[in-house]
Length: 339
Ligand SMILES: [Zn+2]
Image (cartoon, rainbow, N blue to C red; front, side, top):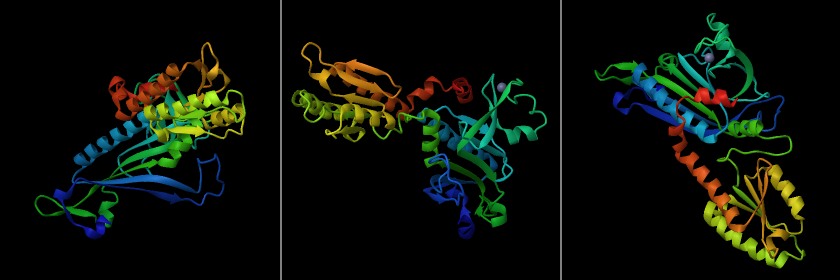
């Protein structure tokens, strides 16, 4: 596109263009659920700069945004120096979730957490035996699912395609490019793959479809009339705390609480609150609260609401990135630790 409209002025640079759209791949064997589907959603971005130097600045700005996003999702990830053979360019990184179903083999240093694509490390004779970062020889092989990548392309494509800009002296010069991608559906599928068990889904806090699932009393049970008063009150107060769109009300009252709870657990809601027989007992009314880690709590009304507020607060902390300043020391180190 920029080759056909070339040359643009240096004043229009840097230019960053992105799109989010579906991609199709004629996968012979779709497998691992959503992980390798024939249709998936990608975010692509291309950057255009006047020089290698400013292109590197763009690269570090975009990389920092990607780092922030993956920290916000709060799923352990590794960022690896990637092979640049196919797309060319001098700098490239990949973001991986580590999972046995991953297609890529990564080598990870047990002491400092540094990770590299095994293709890259093996092509460098210096690195086959030791970690390029701390020189430890304790490298272990792990499998990675690639969820994002960044490339500094230089003029590898702009030069042959004639994508140029007019520099300050009015002379045409090749644009210096970068390209960046996030596999949006793949992030969701791989995060679920990493966090979930065979029986239950576990969501990254920010990606869970709902924060709270509320299960009311069964139709015709003797606690129904009194419990429904509490249920209705909770519908309002929980919605006020976390937003009504974050509250799933399972009002299929013809089903037992047990049946609805089982389904709720499979879906992995961060908090499931049950308003059952215990909620109307005289001495100390209790709500059953199920956490996505399998923990079950019996709480009074205000304790349960506090838990909802706490969850909501954690989400806000992740969203506004306040956590980043606390542990910005080194991603690879903390990630290496978690693995
Ligand atoms: Zn190391």
